Length: 165
Image 1 (spheres, rainbow, N blue to C red):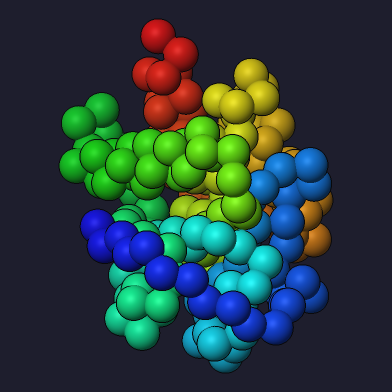
Image 2: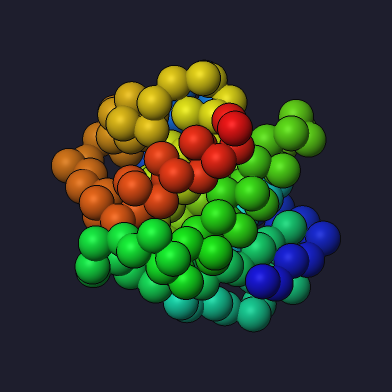
């Protein structure tokens, strides 16, 4: 994981970054980051990249974390090593939520699976709701037909269960 403590001030891109209503979490995708990278961070204080792509210029200019989570393509195993990275991402976003300051951008390659399920897990824990309810809230915010991979939803539910125990 890479984390830096710098800020980037730029123009607003509300039309391409969607904020979950009533929350501090924004979701977007890699295309937006690649196309408008210099412009995306005005609305957020922290950004968490869950894709395999990491542009070091952002890492050095913003409060930025890169936690690479492979795309989910297989049903989760109880001891799936990908869960450790997934849990790390959830723990990190949760820790940012606990600071109660600044908005958080969570993104992955498409903005429909990894970022959605991590955001849903953190919001489910915060709001004492289910991961599936929070996926619907994120879906409403994104205005897209989101389909988080079943593996990621299972990981999200597992993380929430472990945090509740």
